[in-house]
Length: 122
Image (tube, rainbow, N blue to C red; front, side):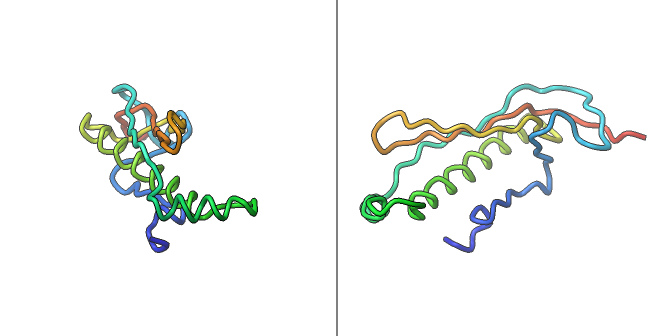
């Protein structure tokens, strides 16, 4: 699991530009297609939950929980990109993440932004 790109914070942007900004340098936004999102609900496996709970007694960063959160963020991002591609988007602007624990041990991770179509500025 440690060799997956999401562990390094890298998301694939080869076919679709994703930015937290409201514009894409060198491009004009021709059309706003709407909000796109990806939602994942994650719970740690029984093993990760047990080890994580034990490690949390000592305080500090709990890598087992970090792995669960990173995987959820990555999967939510991938679903959001898939949603944008289905709308024929060239980019997602205003990209954000949100997470909410809605029941004991279950966390929703939401990736969202605005899908747009672009034209290169001349």
